[in-house]
Amino acid sequence: MASAMVNRGGCRIMKSVSAVLGTRFYAKIATGTDIVSAASNVSLQKARTWDEGLASKFSTTPLKDIFKDKKVVIFGLPGAYTGVCSNKHVPSYKENIDKFKAKGIDSVICVAINDPYTMNAWAEKLQANEAIEFYGDFDGSFHKSLELVTDLSGALLGTRSERWSAYVVDGKVKALNVEEAPSDVKVSGADTILGQI
Image 1: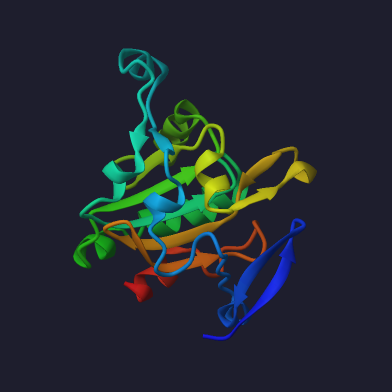
Image 2: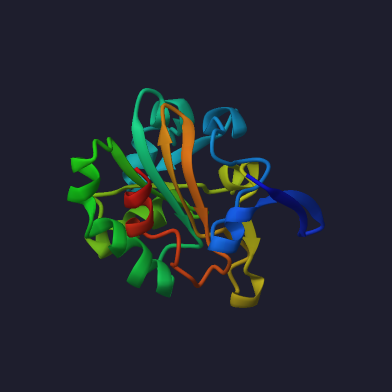
């Protein structure tokens, strides 16, 4: 696959020809990357109520527990309660959950740079918490490790996740899709990733 170097946020990164097709691949995470190694020593926080967090002593979930020996579809988005995330991105996965299960997917996961309590309340509001596992990346360390962050200060959101999706088997990225703009759901929605499994 041909590729070219491009600048993004002052950093030189690898951009593949697939970018022309609306999918971007970065040096830190791309097809074939071991997501657990790429974000070593990073844990996510399973969506839960404050009381559940307190009872668990604010436990986190290591990435190996999420991905090892599993087929996972994971998608990241800029934030809970935001328009496109609530109205398009999450519903695309919720409405297709049976198709994912039919293809042998063990987990469909939504992750955002939010705390797990906000993610929990949002999942309940969307009535998606039975179909999709929601995780918080409260300090952005997961997304920063994968170089999947963007500055949305113009929308008063600060540092947030890019809008992306990946198909991961036993920790290895088999397909990755990153939107050109955080307001788009052109390549990161359920239909695209279903076609890549």
